[in-house]
Image (tube, rainbow, N blue to C red; front, side):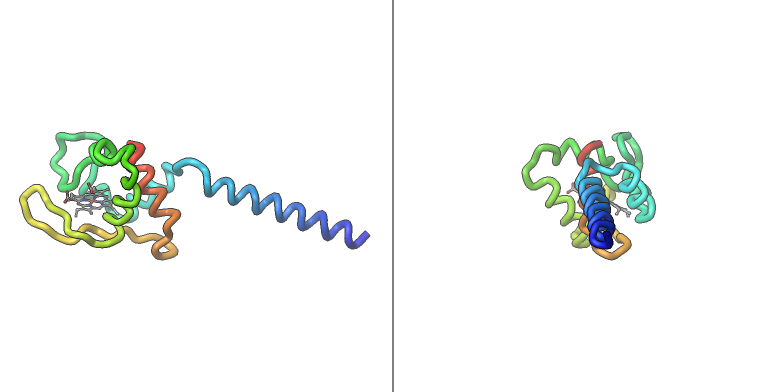
Length: 121
Ligand code: HEC
């Protein structure tokens, strides 16, 4: 009797675990990506699509066109937003590109989700 109810509980736990794993491995979470970009002020310098804007960074659609389908595209962009590498601004000056901040820090799932969302623009 006791054994049965215990194994029932663990079966539920296993099912819940499986469900949460499959959710996190699913397609791009656009809302989460946008929220992370907002929190990090990415939109201060990047638009989504408008190519003729006066923002300092390239619109994400352009970034996507450049990297889509490239084998190392995702890794390249993860590097770009996590390393603080030099970014060239339209006026010619260079400064370290913003490093994305996540909570908890350096959460690769969130960072990859953001990059995949950019690549899907
Ligand atoms: C202060 C302005 C500024 C902010 C804030 C900013 N960026 Fe950028 N970003 C730039 C500039 C300028 C470039 C162009 C760099 C270059 O071509 O050298 C760039 C380029 C990029 C690229 C393309 C890199 C490539 O290799 O083509 C991506 C992707 C990107 N930024 C993502 C982000 C994300 C995500 C955030 C927020 C975490 C962010 N940026 C915040 C200015 C900014």
